[in-house]
Image 1 (cartoon, helix red, strand yellow):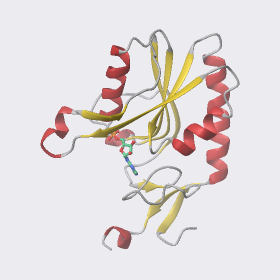
Image 2 (image 1 turned 135 degrees about the horizontal axis):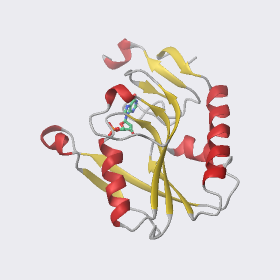
Image 3 (image 1 turned 90 degrees about the vertical axis):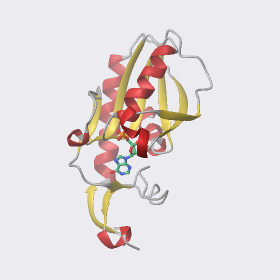
Length: 179
Ligand code: IMP
């Protein structure tokens, strides 16, 4: 285990098995649809990469990078688009791939944006869900693991941009925050 972690929450093996399980379900659900899997950078990278290997139907992939406004405007849920999609999603069945859903604000805004772009359907697959953190109405369509309201890192998830490369999900030691 990484020396900055106090515990492993979800092992590499469990993540691998979950990606396979989700990929198989999505392959069936999107059979004969016009699937575009959209990853939200940067946290989605390990998850989207492992997930699509288990989706057996034709699909396109695209990415968006958004950042949430914090502070005074946080309650409005405004997000800034740092990188928009490269291709059109008009008439497409969009599946957004997220690392974790917490308050749900970011995703809610992204769903609204994709809807304006003319997506035919929009669903969400997330590796992790923290339902206790939710402040807007948002229920992900496919969830890998429900976790408690605890800050986690690894497998794409960062603390100050570090720890994204850890191949499992873990909880940081308290002293790491106060360094
Ligand atoms: P929200 O659902 O709009 O609150 O934002 C979700 C985003 O917050 C995720 O895509 C992550 O970037 C970040 N986030 C939420 N919880 C965690 C966590 O436990 N560890 C690392 N990042 C997190």
